[in-house]
Length: 255
Picture 1 (tube, rainbow, N blue to C red):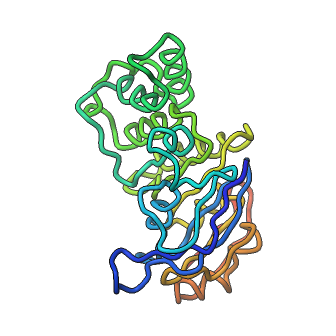
Picture 2: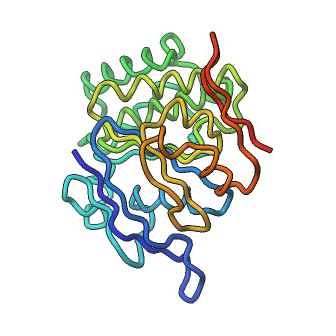
């Protein structure tokens, strides 16, 4: 499976400056791309184009040679799942929320296999035993895991995440990172996440796109792109990379 972005340009209204200019890249199954940049650099906009929620003024997004813009919403939802920065849920239980992710695959009501899949995903997300709990009774980290479980219930080929650890405490952030790291080795998914935390990107991503004012500053493997020189250009502050030590991975310091 392959995701292709070909020379994407996008503006939110006619005559307005382009939010994205000349974005091209290719990803294959098993790769995780981190989108890094300052606020307003185009990270969330690029996710919306990949999800088919916005259409480019120029260029195309293709998944396995299919133009996502040409697919009906139901067919697109079978292939692409988006976890927004602030997931919105109806008043429902954990299990009901996850089963909402099965809607693109259903003809009427959940089947036995849909319930089994939802249960398997909840167990994997560490939410087994909380199926009947109302969402408002969950912590922020648990609700984020429910949002991820709902997206996985779509059985997508492309998983998009917008700031998946924002507004979470350190423990909840580590849990989300662990879950994301566990998704890639299965080899049946492409993952793209917009993120502010460079050190989290270093732990999760195989590839990185640095966006500056809607333009690509650098694109490549994480080890080649997450460097003090490029990050300093991106964020316009001094950057240091501290080498790994026992019990602590390599990480960046800013300022």
